[in-house]
Image 1 (cartoon, rainbow, N blue to C red):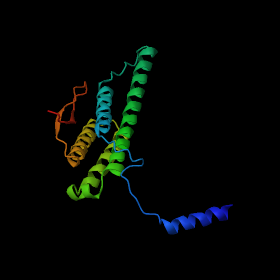
Image 2: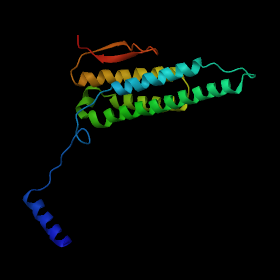
Image 3: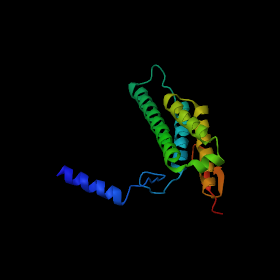
Image 4: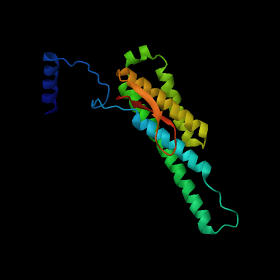
Length: 174
């Protein structure tokens, strides 16, 4: 049976030889947006703010107070790390699936920008560092501006309107 299938496939290959094809994503879906990376970076910044603002219980504080503080700290750290990883993943999707050689011609430092942003995401997973969180948000914002520019879409940078503050790149529909 395998010989018959192999023979048929060889005949098909001769009649209609396979051609190389390429797609910019695995499906290809064509749906890309840097907004998720920006929101993840903004969340990393917010978790750093919450960690910095967490009140350390006094040495003689009741156990419940100390446990509540430890619980909050653990949750903030987990959320910070999860969103740093999510930011990295969302950036990787753009880097590997959306951007193409013609984009590199116009933005020759694009690989360096993505590499730097990925390193910043990793640093934010490893540390509590407000400056690193702000740098990650700035890096995702810069990539978002480039992304939309490659599509010929006007953007604006504006406040996030979130408790954390920070600025995000928005499509300018005005």
